[in-house]
Length: 212
Image 1 (tube, rainbow, N blue to C red):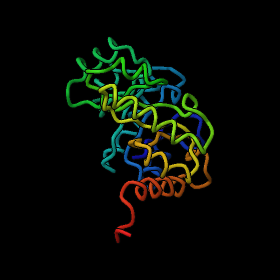
Image 2 (image 1 turned 90 degrees about the horizontal axis):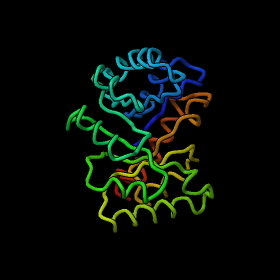
Image 3 (image 1 turned 30 degrees about the horizontal axis):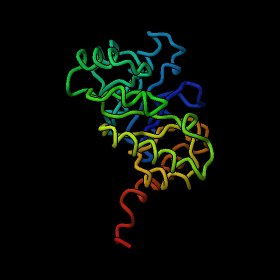
């Protein structure tokens, strides 16, 4: 799974950028609060411009932090940078069982503190795992192992601007997917850049159709 994060610093308008990314095979869009410079009205405008594109392409859309806006627009869910238990509980109560709730976390301890809550996935940035490409997948593997041993089975999404050759190892380490932004948005051809990421992820998860 690839999550593409709209941060509003890209060379294309959000709706156009989203269209290219979806044409490349991505089916999960996240709107960062940075996309609107933390201005609620502008964040709503960004979301409303992206929603039709996501609907036409049967793609998930989540918005960072603004539970009220998610509820108002009835998009698929919210991504919470505040991983306090009370924040997650309030979001679930407000949005209901059908909503997707993702949570930002930097350490296994933060994730283990959410044990028992209805969380769909946790997003862990590479900067808090380690930036050595040779050891990065193993560090995610160790984190996921510690979570499973602690009785937590949330999906773990690795967040960063990963090289293509690192993606198979991240999936092999147990990550459910990756969240990326600039490496796709700043590419000469975002559609092609997305397709290359999606191909690597799908190959890592499913292998060749021939079974070889």
